[in-house]
Amino acid sequence: MSQITPVFKREFLGYFRSPVAYVFLVVFLVASVGLAFFVGQFFRANQASLESYFVFHPWLFLFLIPAVGMRLWSEEKRSGTIELLFTLPLTTLEAVLGKFLAAWTFLALAILLSFPMAITVGYLGQPDWGVIASGYLGSILMAGAYLGVCSLTSALTKNQVVSFVLSVLACLVLVFLGWSVFNSALSAVLPVWAVDLVANFSFVTHFDSFTKGIIDPKDVAFFLSLTGFTLFLNVVALER
Amino acid sequence: MIEVKGLVKNYGSKRAVDNVSFTVNRGDILGFLGPNGAGKSTTMKMLTGFLRPTAGTALVNGHDVTRDPVAVKRQLGYLPESAPAYGEMTVAEFLAFIAETRGYRARSEKLARVNRALDLTQLQSVRTQTIETLSKGYKQRVGFAQALLHDPAVLVLDEPTDGLDPNQKNEVRTLIKKMAAEKAVVLSTHILEEVEALCTRVIIISQGKVVADETPEALHARQPGARLDSIFRSLTQSDR
Image 1: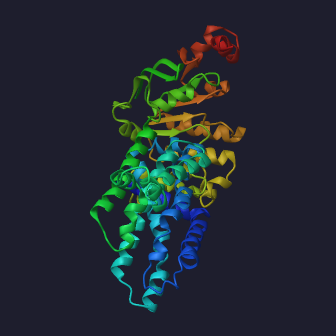
Image 2: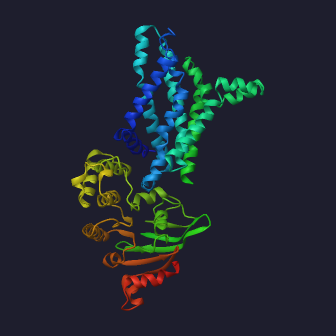
């Protein structure tokens, strides 16, 4: 497992060797903070909380995480460096984990760079710091699950556009299953337990409680197991 | 040092490599010849553990590539066709990454390895340039440096002189000859003069099958007085 380190290092620094990192960080911060201010009514809500910041994350991630994840394996396949990588003395699992952890760390950095929002809230009122911390934790865990899905679709093709579209679609399904509008439409035809069952497979359902300050082991387990499962399929897809 | 036993590779219903066997000993430079699409690269990819053979196996220093691919990859230096590399990295960064995955983690040791590889391939002058800005000849040498970095016992080179000018070709051949004494070298090429200049043994492969495995002299003796390319043509003409 020590072979994860060089792969991680190369991948993580790779974001900063190209414009990808800077473009992504700026777009992510402008979009996430902009949504909180202009759509989420950050000030008018008159509450010392970041709920109006976190509530948009499932939708924002839908487009921004595939943008990071699409190149993970597609790029290696297109440029032929995958042949180089897999003739170095490392296992497929080590390569998958190294690249995934690098991208996840990068996403966590993007999320945490919104810290001036938290400082603003702290300056203007008395926020519950526990709720803010659990919001960040939930957001980072959810980003990992999104990224797992994107890494998997990226391993299936050498075309980045195909990879992007596939991952947006897969993530869209995982968001929609728990979207309140979709669920209330569903409850007209299905019994309540069936709607709950469907909603349980959604990012939104499991993320909501984090934004309210509740860290439920079930939700943590959902995100971690979805991440683990997609990464397992990722290894299988590459070893095929 | 290399023992290839009955390698077979099927792509769907097409058999790309059909029961290829050969051995290479220390001090040998084996030239792998054949028309484009004959299965040279596929055989090399199986030997280096990048592709899983449909049947058969290869042993490198006693390690079985189908059972313990990581051990085989440790013994090998491999230059894939068209020398893929991470274009956004500088030459020195890229080689440092290779050094780390090859287990040279200590700073001084890593630097010594990188410098030695840069010296051998005469790349010191471009060490701080990003790889994507290099000309084809330099890129090829970066691929070479990467394969030589850990001073492997076995070198597998897929078209090492492809895209080089005559002077560079000569340098690469001198380098291969200089190192060959204590290594086993397999190189593929479709330049016949290269085989005469360099190789101690020749394997000609046509439609996935070995059609000749002998010294260049023995190959010449097949049709006394004939040029090597006409012998090559008569051995591989079943392709047309």
